[in-house]
Length: 68
Figure (cartoon, rainbow, N blue to C red):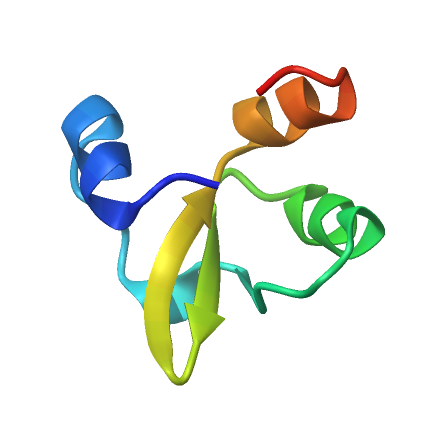
């Protein structure tokens, strides 16, 4: 997971949050993979109704490989 700020520095403006798949900080890897399938937009991690981070397909795949 990366911060919204870091995502926007590297990838440009985040699409509207309500158009992106959303997950909670405690959601497991299977949930994140399911959300990423068939989706081009990043997953927005929401905690207390606020975006706290972004998970992209690239970061999800690197995490599955054990990379940080």
